Length: 112
Length: 113
Image (cartoon, rainbow over all chains, first blue to last red):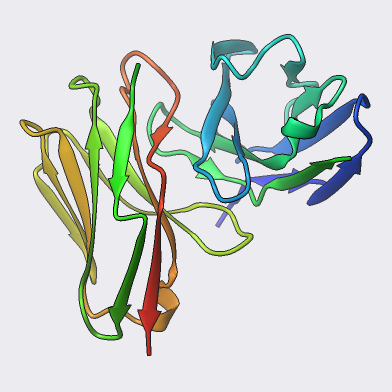
């Protein structure tokens, strides 16, 4: 069964550095998402992406963040100038339609 | 704004007993309600979902009920097993107007052998 994949599984970075989190959505899916989960808390929506543009973004998703689909398979989340509070698990998800979303295994980001 | 409340935050049951987790949503236009199971350090996995035109859905030991009038939906797990131990998240989405899931705060279920 096809699954969403994410790399890296863990990323440690220094405050102020830039990180790029990568995702490969399920191949026939058209909608892509990023969520984050701070340790012990609920999953929070960051951004959705459809037809090569952002469809919706949360207030968390400010100018520090950007997303890109650089080719036909990858979907990336870039975090510029990371802050301590960006430490979280970041999940990518994809869906064929605007309903059932399938989640990747996550990237655990630690900002020191 | 949209909000989903989930109760209880933790739940312990004896193996073989039933477990019930409840969620309440604020946006009456929400029309799709998935439930995810998340084991420690792993991805959220969809276990069951329900659409607003249905009142109940069952899949083996798992069932979900929806009360649109009261704006709440519940997950029912019967004959619980130790491998059901995980964090369960409910979510709501308005599929015609938005793309984002609004998640509940999660319920940590512990099934005691």
